[in-house]
Image: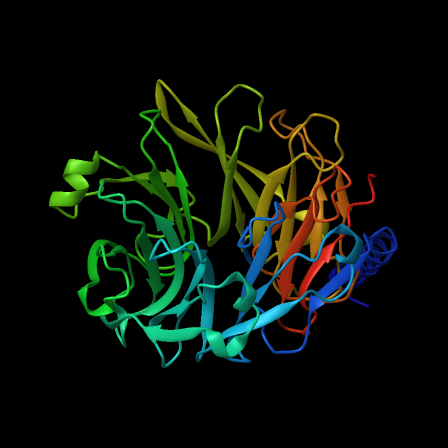
Length: 402
């Protein structure tokens, strides 16, 4: 028998046994909703003022956008109260934002596929009607209709007029990052204006972050495909400049030699300087650090359990030891099965591979954007995500630390 075949077979056996062993240490999984198809990301906000974060999720194959109200810690392990706020085709992202400043939190969805349109789902003004589907109203945003494969939106005040705007992004032909200027009367959708900022291949992340310490909210992004792929930030040059023209200078950070997926930023080295962290499709997690006297530098650490197709990464203190850890999710990987969600134990800036711990078992293969919050109010961070290939749906994993 060929020696290389024996070596590969032995490696597969080792990885399989390792994955099975890890899966036995996984966290409890709780289902918020698995009644539609293709749950594709979760965004957070307290929409009813009860001090608990609520969720919104688009279901790409199911063609629905749903809001979920946190039921309180005693009922958090059961399916949550929900409402379908709109029916649209190929929704890729949905985000909370009170566009018309009436106190009712609306939802904006971004659709790709043949739809290529963004939609506003207007919330009913009465809090008593929030979970009544017939009280929601869905309208397309004309400036986006049929224009691009819309992927992600970031509510952000862009031009100093005190009106919340939307930073928006897309993929594929004519892909871009730009922003939608929302007029004083937000419900006058025909008056919304689109401003293109940069060309793009396939935008994964849009985050607001002060990247240069001037107290202005810059835009941090990851672009996974195309000639300009990588991680970069767009500089906020002041409200006057933003209002008068399209210029937001782009500054590259790194990752151009990787397929960068969802990113996060956090102080991993306890030096009051935030690093940028990226999941990639190259079997590595990238950590990018800025140096005052030179450009950004990149450090790579191995993705957990030999995973090749990372999807998302989040920073947080998982084991409550005062040190920042990372949580990592994956898309489908070649055999053998392995946990799709894991956490890497800090410290992470000491030049050695961190200890890896499973969060999910072997169920599920295509996980998405991660969120870390204390769902059950026991003092530790739980993990919220979606799984869309095996239809686990919108789920959360309960941190067993407490």
